[in-house]
Amino acid sequence: MRNDFHDEILTLIKENSGKPVRDEFLDNYFGNDHIKYPIRNPLLRLIAKEWMRDHRDLSPEDFKDVLTSLIEGESTTEKMIAGFMMGYSSKKQRTFDPEILDRWLDHLVGWVEVDTICTGDFPTTQLPSDWSRWKKLIVRLSKDDNINKRRASLVLFCSPMSKVRDEDMSTVAFKCIDRLKSEKHVMITKAISWLLRSMIKHYRKEVTDYLKKNSDTLPKIAVRETTRKLETGKKTARGL
Image (cartoon, rainbow, N blue to C red; front, side, top):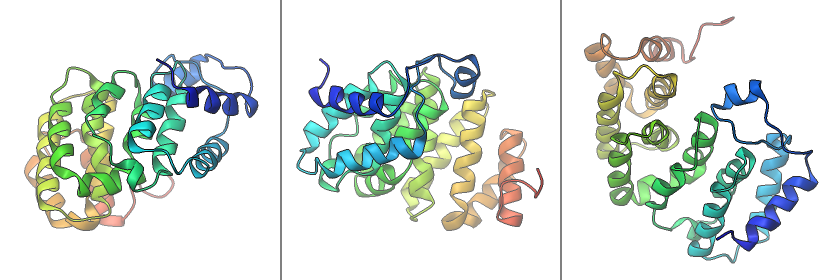
């Protein structure tokens, strides 16, 4: 059932954008054919920030229900604002069971939708603090037939691994990379590259050693971009 707050948030989106559209270029870029409201990300973030500021009293369960309703909505914009809201949520509001992410990912298609939900401040705080539950979920997602879930198993690590050092988290991250490194789809190859680069700050030696041992089996883009980041601190050479 659609959440009442969903209608409130969707009204705010509509008041600040034009009519929803389907566009072949955007569909190709986003990796899905969901409708999209013509609204810039900074304004969408502002709507999310102000709405969360006005709803600080929402319980974790109620907050989860709002997010679920938005993520199950028909537009990419609804799904994206849910991700932005997660980033502006309070510490208490974030304590819902992470297993709900498995359900959410059934409604997320393409890198933009997956990454907006699975990266940022939310996983940065929640993975380290609730690792035992997130670990079970991530391992399962990495084995799923749904490529969006497999991508999520990688990008969920990107924000937290760039901020903290945790031996068990890094072990599982490398295992997920091992499990998926033979895949050729850009959804996976780019995610592996992103994760390896995200780990350099706190796991430089481990990433360097892993690259040496697995350079022949890792996606070429991951080897190229990670090597460049190790050598220069940047993903690509200047001018590329």
